[in-house]
Length: 347
Image (cartoon, rainbow, N blue to C red; front, side, top):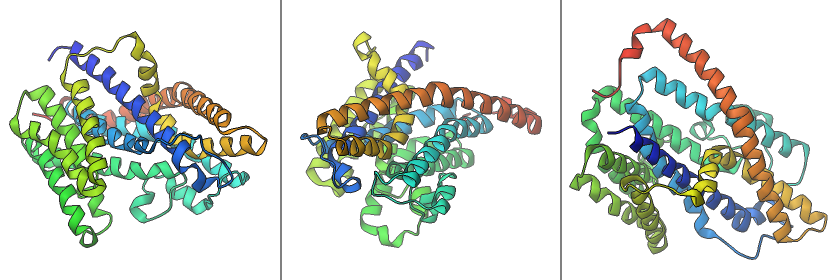
């Protein structure tokens, strides 16, 4: 594989992340807002399909995390994931908790104990409420990381071709046997309703890097069919469109042009945007409308504030702090296991 291909692919995936983050934001501001700010009026345009932005995030994760694992040692992967996920998450969690504790603009209460558990990002595993509703998806992300890392460490790369099919089967099994699967094993064993999406991302990566395989290709149309078990025809159609777009982004030689640059930027700040837009945006919308602003104006200001905050968190907190932590942890790992640098997870 050339050095150019990964760069193009990663840029296209940044665009997918940007679209996913914007879709989720529009869904929350146009559909979910009244649940948390009953007096607020959402914009008179609902975007219910925006909730499927999380599905797109999961497919992107399936692709990107396997790529990261294959290019890293075990310690490099663990350090890169920790320093990528936690610094901005901690600050977002603290900011949201402070807002909810010091104001009554959002109808949602969080205790100090819940906040402390949330700092671990493991709150869903111990059945503690999220500080912000969007954190629910992080439990599925962490479960996927743990599952894939463990599978590759125990079985090696020979297990990779079987994992997408396993995840499809896990999503089907969960539809009919969910009450019999202990919590949180369904997260750690990829036996849940979103498992097929991660499997779809794995299949796309294998098709991109290993060449055509009928089994992996069959996973792509199968994923929307599995989604139909949970969301019916609507879910099937939306996820089929998502899989089609992801297939173009991952498998074609399409190169984003200048018009796509805003979405590349949006993809770069998508994690911070995802973590902070919901409760903070609700607070802005509720407060502005209480002061007399209309739905569209309050929405536009909340959107602008969410984007500015995400940009600031990404470029002035997440990236410098993550780089500093990564350097320190990498040096520490090298002192403990100096031979780790020559070992790769893949053969």
